[in-house]
Image 1 (spheres, rainbow, N blue to C red):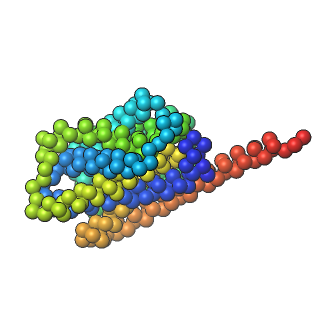
Image 2 (spheres, rainbow, N blue to C red):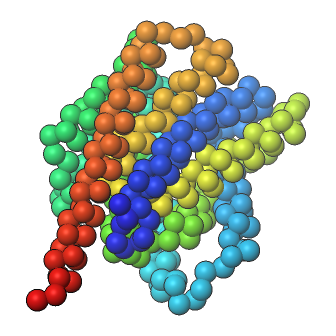
Image 3 (cartoon, one colour):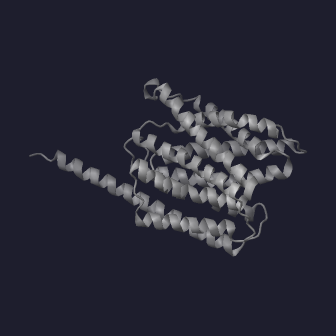
Length: 323
């Protein structure tokens, strides 16, 4: 099940994506706790998330620097960092703007719902990756589950400006995913380096907007807020994005987009168990549909990888039979 270009097994890549998606889902609950304790705005929080995550990644890379011969050329690494960082900046900033314009529910459904569709189309046109009927059914099931989970309680307001911003956010997310997959197939991606470079570019893009919004929060519990920011920087940022970039390099792009829908599932579970929100039929139904779709598509991806490795092994054995 290993991917020839990067050496990372597809099964392990799927596991990385599952952990990353679940970790991303905890960021919303932590951000809600920060919002209750301070006046730190969403753009400033996103800046601190990326900047502190970058610092943690750089510290983590110090004990085991990579050999110079194993590293891609500097110009290529810079291009990768700029492209991924811009995609991440558009993804996060446009999403926050969409939430402000049309509300959390609609922004989440449009962004996370349009992402798999755009990625599946892009993967077919640019990478030649076929989704197939089972994959299309899994994507449809996942999007249905997302809509039920987020919109099930009603009360959502749809505004055109917010929808357009959410689509821009989905486009940034899609570009980031497709580029990572393409570089992974070419064997020119480094998960840790890509993550660090993306965070550096995104931090620079967000800094002026964060300064306008206010970088330093006013709070009666500074240590509490600092610990929460540290958690967001460490787990759903530095760890999760490193796992995401590693997994997205070896797993088909459409599968990546569906697996990452575990984020709203985790967020919903934490909203009920930690934040005290009520458990509804929509939450249960949407969660079940999403988990079923993710499980089915991940299993299909793993079976396909095993079949591909088996074919390669059979070819290799036939070529080594003495005549």
